[in-house]
Structure formats: structure tokens, C-alpha cells
Image (tube, rainbow, N blue to C red; front, side):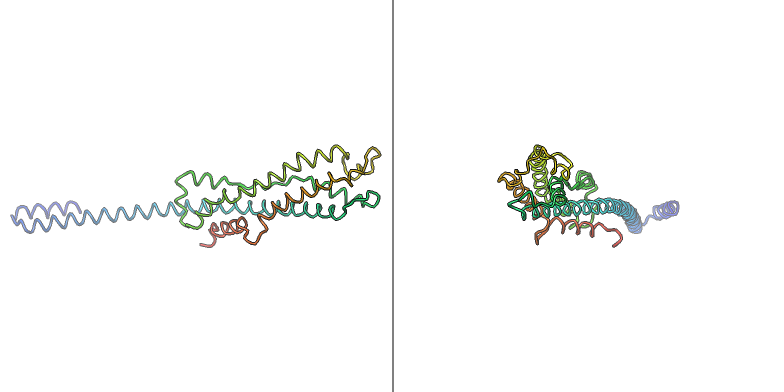
Length: 244
């Protein structure tokens, strides 16, 4: 192709036709420009193809991570609902008469109330993506927005969860540890144990405060406008590459 153009250029120069040479030169420039544009377009197509492949890998990572996050959250919510149920069962016994207690169910309630469930919600993929140029590869604007908001969205939940865990660890567990040996079922029948503490204001307030902390925590994920669960489900849907 180049050799043909050279021959045409040479013949036009020898012919002495300036007008024809100008038209030829313009045509040659146009061919060069078209070639460059085609090359750029091919390069853009290749880059876009690579970006889409990389996006699919990122979406798969996000999808897997948030499916695990959903399982973690639902499991923890279930555990705290279980604790709330046991707190309510004990409160329904107030004022407690130790002689009328079903020791099996009461011991189980004491054991469950001191539980320390925690949602291990991972944010590894979000942090690695947001802190790199890979974030712009995600083409869905809604998904990008949800990922950016995720950490702030769950911060209140983590704060309330930490409060519930700290109260159990710093107050309930030491309180029971000073009064009943474990396991609680046999501890309640231990002759060294004075069960009169079950009828004290301190014990009743202990259970009420535990229930209050858990209600505040669960209210975050059980209210009508449950943004955490909605965002979780939406991120899972938007990052599902099988929907493509």
C-alpha cells in the first residue's frame, strides 16, 4: 500500500499538476487520519473489553462478600432475638420466687442472656476497590453509591452492638459470676448460693437494662425503613453477574 502511494505521489510531482497533487495530499492525510481513528477505536474496544472482564471479577467478589455479610447479619439478629426472648421470660417472672422456679429453663435463660453475638461484616472488597482506580470500572452508578455509603450505614449498628456486648461482658457476666457457679443448672442448687438476689432491685434492673440495649440494637435492623437489610439485598442483586 505504501509503495503504491509513493508511485502515485511521484507521478503527480513529475506531471507538474499542483492541483492534482494537493487533492492527492489531502486524500493521503484523510487516509492517515482514518487509520488513526480506526486504531484508536480498536484500542478502545480492547480496553473496554478488559475493563468489563475486570468488572465481572470485581462484581463476583462483591457479590460473594455481601452474601456472607447477609448470613452474618441474619445469624446475629437471630441470636439477639433469642436473647431478647429469654430476657422477657425472666422479666415475666418478676418478682421471682426461687422456690417456684423451673431451674432448667431459668438456667438456660441466664446462660443465653450473657451471650456475646457479633456480626462479622466484611468490608475488604469495598476498601480495596474504593482506594484504587478499580472503583470507576463498576459501571452501575447505584451500586457505586451503595458501596460508598455502606460503611456509614452500618456504623450505628456496630456502635449499638458494641454497647450490648460490653454490657454483657462488663456487667452481666461478672454479676452472675459472683453469685452462681457454672454450669448454672447445678449452680442454682449449690448450697453455697443464696438465691434471694433474684428478688432484688439490682437483678431486675440488670435484666431490664440488657433488654433495653438489645431492643435498641434490633430496632436498627427491624424497623420498617431497614436501610441496612435493603442495601444488603440491593448490593447482592446489582452485583449478580448472572443477571447480565
